[in-house]
Image (tube, rainbow, N blue to C red; front, side, top):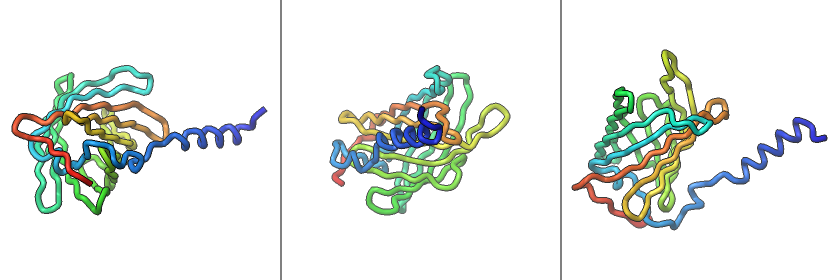
Length: 184
């Protein structure tokens, strides 16, 4: 019989073998350059599913993005299906080729992002309002640019390494806000 310690080591090993890295997507087209994609007006539609796959929340987001002095500022206005509204302002800087950092209300510390090919992976901790309290959760957030300018976002939300659920969003540039794929 396998000891509990050996079983735990096996599970950690198995989960570590399948982890995708942003570098794995280098060369995929179209190239995602977030400071170009999010300049101007963008619209997003999203859902949150709990760890059992149950739909818990739906929302829309209107985003206004500006790129100035090396900082991408995203003003995100959320409208949830229950009528609640929320605004989040992100300030994102490009540290070096492929590397970004972001700050926003609710983000604990700094969000770190790596972009290669058509993908960007953000990792960060977030103070999430839950009822009358706040939970500090972790986000593993992936964005994938598609050939028609649609950007698909999938984020796993965990607490103490336990999966709480997943956020899925689809972004679309609005008229007058063209998408331009740039070479790396």
